[in-house]
Amino acid sequence: MDCMLSIELEPVGEGTWRLRWDDTFTSSPVRVYVGGTPATIDRRQPCAISARAEVEISGLAGFARPYFELVPAQGSPLVVGPRQVLLAGGVNFRDLGGYLAAGGRRVSWGRLFRSGHLSRLTAADQTLISTLDIRTVCDFRMAEERLSENGALQCAPAVVTLGIPPGLKDRFYFHRLFEQTDDPAVIIEAVHEVLRSMVEESAARYAQLFEVLLAVPSGSILMNCSAGKERTGVGAALVLMALGVTRATILYDFCLSRQYYPAAIELPRALAKYEVAPRPGRDVNALIEPLLVTRASYLECVFASIDARYGSDADFLQQALGVGPRERTHLQQLFTQ
Image (cartoon, rainbow, N blue to C red; front, side, top):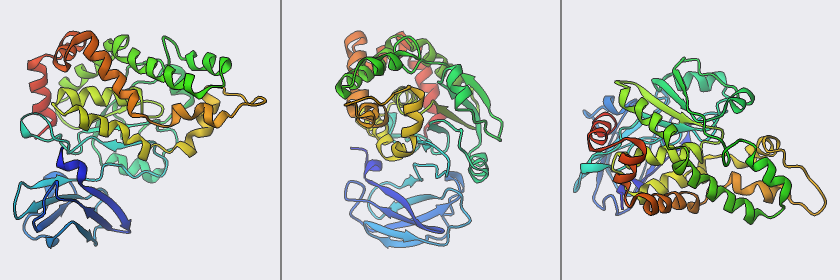
């Protein structure tokens, strides 16, 4: 198990963050250092000494996103940052950094981000996002979705549109399905079919994503769609796969949408988007729930499809996406350390 998955970092007050870990990381005392970016962590003076299992660090109001280096008395140091980008109007906006990748390296913090739509960002959100150095946005939404969920970043990154339908073949797939059924189980199986189609029929779009990643010399990249869960979730999974992250960790990241996607807030938008109308005997909330809640099976069916058609992740990446050993090595040089 990647010890990163056992470490929790959360804000507990203005300028105060709590770190927790278990023996998967270390049972020995830990020194903690902090900085505003991974590159500027101040290693001259620890902000905590001999911490065990949990520590609160205060006085960090000056850091938009603090990063911590945990240095155990026994074991290897580890840099930890906030997974979620805390935005008042953001949807499922988070950092892919820190995961254990190929060759014992780790995915770089602050280089790869994923999110849902950006249409409700506040001025403070825009200011925070401007500190992330996002140079490119890869947007998986269709043109109609971009119109109804319009939200431009003031930092003015380049936007690459990689439209993938939020359904099978076209964007009205779920509209038709919701008209035909009142059974949530039917919707769950439809989501499985849609996720499988993303690697079977939308491979060309994800291949373009990798072309963008391989061409970016500096700065960070944001992948996004409407919810930041399925189309973006598959995109993030494939990127992590190319970086040598294990399937177990990729699934862990995919399922974090359960925690970071604001289902209750997004419920009215989803009902309107798919025109789920009430009628006698119909529980519209239960019917739309499969599109609001992330299930492990949604990504597991993607893995199963890759195994059935290609036999291995490496063969899938090379044959379907054009990401062979040379490209994977270059991606690891760009996005891991």
